[in-house]
Length: 58
Image 1: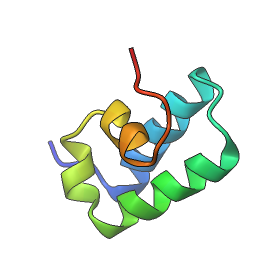
Image 2: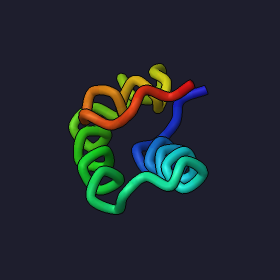
Image 3: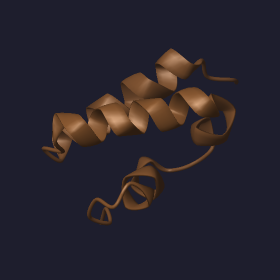
Image 4: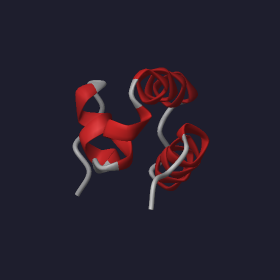
């Protein structure tokens, strides 16, 4: 099932909220998701966080 960009961003927001990620990193992640939502629908949010320079999930 395909996910819309908004669904991917909602998942990202929840991921960040649970980990107390800064609003700035959340916004940066949303911008990255907007560029290629199909790609990020198939990736872990930890991969996105790591790409943005945040701590690796785990």
